Length: 333
Ligand code: FBP
Figure 1 (cartoon, rainbow, N blue to C red):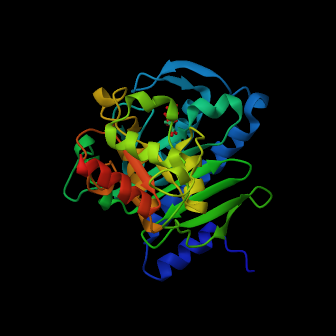
Figure 2: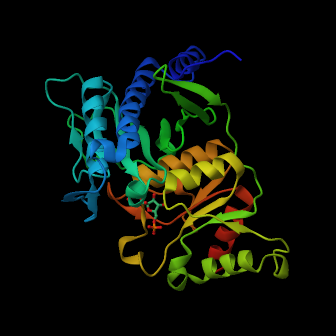
Figure 3: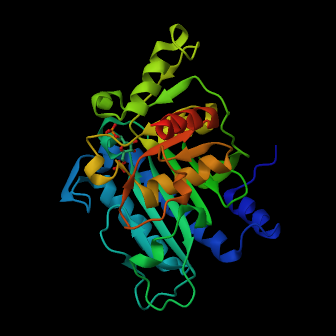
């Protein structure tokens, strides 16, 4: 089979009118940054990049050294790229402005530089998640308000998975496509065309240690899954929880499943656990582009009107039939 690189794939998308030169070049800059992050992640203790950084992020969470390194790599690469008006990162409180002496562009980039931080020091897969929005016309200075667009306004979304192999999974609104990093060539090679989420599944992912905090609809749904053949579902379900959203979502994109980080009494005061703008929205766009569904339990995630850059939301996504069932349980109250 002809090996197609990410660059060739994006040029073909552009020729087909599905993307434009600026967005294509922006995605290539992000992909280059991801390759640099992959090198750091794979070096681990050899490069002294494991462990705590000794600082906290905007969410008040202790930062890992790799959180800071990955964040710096993405900021520096994209500041220089010339395709952005501004950026937003899980690790930075304010909107990150492009230095005055660098060229600016028509897009806004949002990212979680290193997702699954709790798994870094134990060598379990982690990732990077990104989302691209248009910079609103007529606005002079980029500010937080520019970013507060519903997920349905995203023009591109993707994630990198730093696992046994490094993968880049991407959508520009024409299906979901996966690329594997060929370390010898130093290029991402097109290996997973038109990834789709099977409609049905017998696999669910949730942090069961939070069970006592769940709302009744989730209690009911998970209990029925655990009852399996002996219960109303009449079939057995298996559970998986990597605690790296990227790894759990990639499994679902590959073989189906449902991922849940629902509202519960432990995270209610924060509005949920996962962040809307650079975790839930990009993953929801990818899952929907792959034929799946993504809700908060009560609303389609891509329809949520953002109010704050770092706001959190409940997340339920994956195989349509299961997402629709647990959402129905929420709406039945
Ligand atoms: P960050 O690591 O980027 O803060 O992401 C949050 C996250 O690690 C998700 O990747 C994952 O799904 C979830 O938190 C795991 O939560 P828990 O520790 O409750 O299992």
